[in-house]
Amino acid sequence: MTLDGLKGRLVARAQEEGFSKAGVCRPDAVPEAAGRLRAFLAAERHGQMGWMAEREAWRGNPAALWPQARSVLMLAEAYTPEGDPMAGLSARDRGVVSVYAQGKDYHDLVKRRLKRLGRWLIDQGGGEIKVFVDTAPVMEKPLAQAAGLGWQGKHTNLLGRDLGNWVFLGAIFTTLELEPDVAEVDHCGSCRACLDVCPTAAFPAPYQLDARRCISYLTIEHKGPVAPELRGLMGNRIYGCDDCLAVCPWNKFAVAATEMGYQPRVGLPELADLAVLDDAGFRARFAGSPIKRIGRDRFVRNVLYAIGNSSQPGLLAVAAGLQSDPDAAVADAARWAVERLTGE
Image: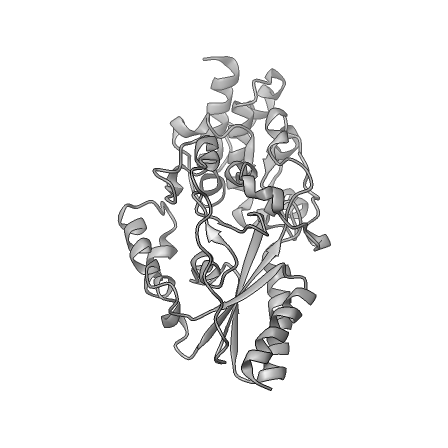
């Protein structure tokens, strides 16, 4: 069997496994990535994500991550929501959770699929593989564009004309020489929908993100108190933010999610219930969810910011009861919420 023939069967097998789209590129297909990453870090737009700088050499050069690799198979898996993810923003007594975190942890689901596909590849063509999904220093989005899956839009996320932008990405590095696909080009045109909808103006320019102002970063990655001038802009978003994804016009061509594990199970939880969670209660409620990784303290901090933005006097007692919380950021958020609700 020729490797070209193997590639065709590999792509077909990827679709059988549940991936929406697959493509191949070389590990050195994104030489511009290192410079863009360097500029991003130099401007300190990564905020507290120090791990990005610590592994800059690998992240900026996929070929250096595993020098033996000759090809990268990039895979996209859809998690497209059935409804409007922005609809919950008007329910101010409830918390809005990003679509990707509504179901089971995608890291586990995608990696399981990648490993099955990787084993199939070894059985059929030999060689060695390494699989990655989000947790390794791999620049998935530039590689996915190089593999023809889509392009990085003005919101810096990957989107495709036949995918939309509700996709998880995974990568299989292999020592096999597979024929690369043609890289996708930009199709954003003059559209500014994703840039203009951002509540915190986190995009200094098209195709540029300042994570320090991004609500997804602030609610998930940022430790400690959030800057006071940004808290009021967070609304009732308690884990992540989907606004820039939700307004993309290309989503009218988005493929449906097929993995039942991505079906929403978190919903629109009441802020009053979430605020009183202790560590054990938090872990039990969000077992198997990506939400669990930020811990109770950061999560309740986010909930208190949402309470402060709720204009719901009935939530005042809940916030007041947390003003002496052992976690300094939670106590600070509780005091801020009380001040907002009382107008003091």
